[in-house]
Length: 444
Picture 1 (cartoon, rainbow, N blue to C red):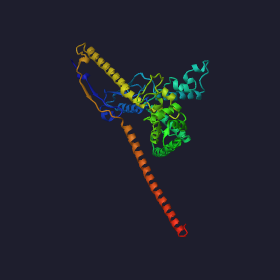
Picture 2 (picture 1 turned 90 degrees about the vertical axis):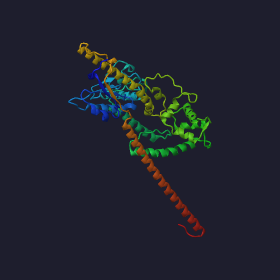
Picture 3 (picture 1 turned 30 degrees about the horizontal axis):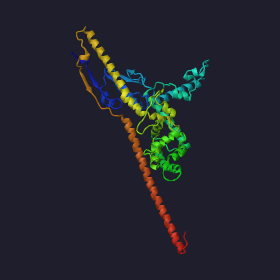
Picture 4 (picture 1 turned 180 degrees about the vertical axis):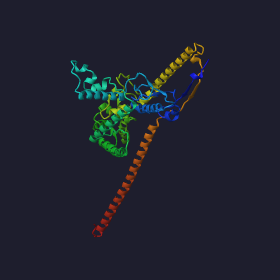
């Protein structure tokens, strides 16, 4: 076997979402090849990850060496070319759309309809409405659930902004609904400011008292337990969007020991159960305990049945967040493997072209077979932790929440001491008045 140093490679690997920049970009020189796999940022659970990769690639591609820079190439599923990259390889999407992609498609559809309306509407056509293109007619609920709408091509930054706008709009709608009605199903909302954390802590205190009052109202005979009939009759007062079968599923889940009734502790676990977990209970068919039956899916997009059967109290973004774990599994098990195989195929083609180049250049004298050659290869790899930005954001939120909870505890402790002190003073005054009355003395 023959090998040549000119055909050798020095391979350095790192996680482009975290430490590629500060560990390897100082090695960027003219003639370097930077290949980065881009996670599919069209999935809401992976948008920030693709944005981190895009920032790393753009930063590395902006470094100049002898009037040039590296050739940066990205491999991924999101069909958007980074402005500073040399090129991009886009892989076909062989999976169905997720609910988050569907939501963006609906937004883009409505935006196109609104643009046509502002411009004067579509031209008149002899075709009936059901044969007109989707952009020429108003979107309906059936379109929103069952038609194959697709979103426009967006960069990772644009995707991040679009999902952030969806979250803000959902938060505003949730606050409007909360001001009109009271529910024991409280959804955890991401807190960004001190006002949000304080409001969440106050709501938590109110929720505990509210749950106890609801339990007492549902307990018709006052024995401290809720029978199945009591639970079914009164749970409609709490959430009228559920039918009797769904309410009985909730009661069966709470009555895990089969006693036929639930106490306050079991009721509290149901009341504090996250909406996503509650939704999974409602979506499961009748089954033996610990045996989950899953039917084959014929959905147009992943989450179609979930969206159709979800109660009105469960927001569409809650349904979308329930798919985050599936998105992460898809990224770590399928999409990353597809990108890796694509990179291997690309390297194989590069090596084959170099092999043919030497053979043709020297008329076969310096020809070699690179599949039987010891390549001059040096590999330096680094660990691949999670993105530090997510960790910093979470730590900041936990620190802020801890300070608020400690402040509330201190205020509550001081208020209770003040209240007990005042009550003791009132009792002392009453005692003095009673003593004065018995002694025929005037008490004021």
